Length: 613
Image (tube, rainbow, N blue to C red; front, side, top):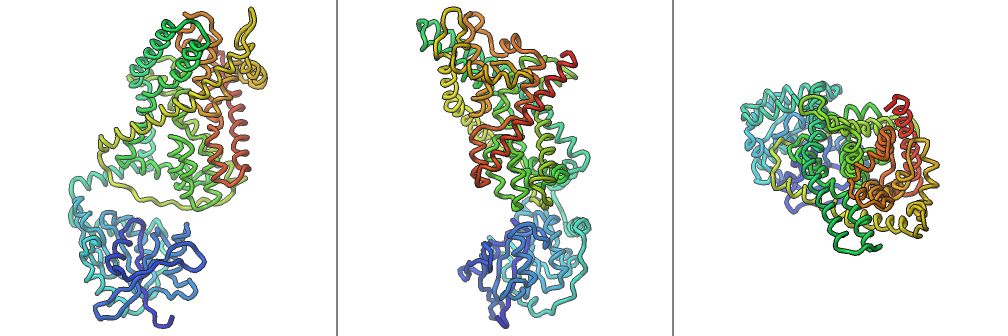
């Protein structure tokens, strides 16, 4: 439309553009879609001091004109006037978050370099001042070469001055655009401009800056991250041991009490050998689960986890993924299901598919009971150096092995079935803060309840079903009950397949119900041994002691290697089918994970035997 004047609000996500747009336009706004896309177009009418109206457009948040998402593509096209029937904006209003100035100045330089009439709204200055940061708008204006107005949109502070600056800017002529400046150079310049514009900062703000220089250091940062993970997995064993022993003792007491209260019968066997031995063998690992999530929640609440994402972005770029994949993969450490669902935020379809396919390789919390029972049974509880224990080192090694395996698989996939270039990744860093005890306790309770509910539903039902399959048909005179049972016959057939990698019949039997939930492998083993053992004194033995008596060390190590790769529960497969809209990729996932599990379990077993372990 001829003579139509537009002012566009431009800036990074979370700069406060929408609040500023609402404050400037009030009810004089409308929402539609840009031509040919689903991205919303928010436009309103702004009355200038002269009385003339100008259309104000709130553009989607962007980190640069090199678009990596549909939102950023829309922002780029609007700024450059590439939408048919949409004139280029007369004024570009660059909105900066005063409390995160350096990061927002990177994109601001790129916009101002276009040579178009521009105004900078230094927004949320009240939050910056609350954090002890005082910024000189005059110094910023001198450095950027365009008017800079301090604003607080939610308090309507600076709105009149900003409106006047927009009116004056639209009367200016376009300047010549500057040559493109590389991103690295703009980052260096942004740092220098921000430092020069800061009049004063509190001790707290300086501390946060120093912490970032330490935690995000290219060499020290990864070492600190690894050290934190090292402490976490040492604590999982060291701190949890007294509580786990107490739960184990309580379950043993319940089994003895049940045997004393009920006459010998199938009902008593179901309660003791099936429910209490099976479900109880998983419940005893609740302390490990709680301690692991305590550290994860604390790192998230403190703001450190976002820094870890940036550190991991460098590693992920090397295998063809971007940092956008880190958050879904991080979620997969709790459970692959929310991790796979979180891939919806990844805009590149090949990037997203690769992330979905490797998410099961992240060591979810369901693996922890499996790892814990095997490590406790076969790895000596000895100190390597001071408080550093061998068991915690092995657990850390399994988690690291899973990450390395996921990155290796991603590299192969990105050069084959999901071939494509990696997309960029930018993320706002939250402020450092002390985690609130109340929030931590609520988070721990939620995760403990999920674990116990899982033990009381899925694991309970699978354990009871397995007990029934192990007890029917009943064994004849002189025949082992397991050999006579339906489950035993199935396991004998599967044992032929897994025997070359060091697995026995009981392990073969545990692998099938483990597809319902990883933890069921532990309850399956406990139930199998309880049903097979006729000596009540032997039945009283803890699962770890039974495994140690029946398995060799190479077999135990192969079992751990199997669970690093073995496919996730059937719920994960179902979610993968829903997210990929078919059975092709879930089938591919099952095939390659089972193949890797078998190959690496075999390599581990054969190597351990060759070394004489």
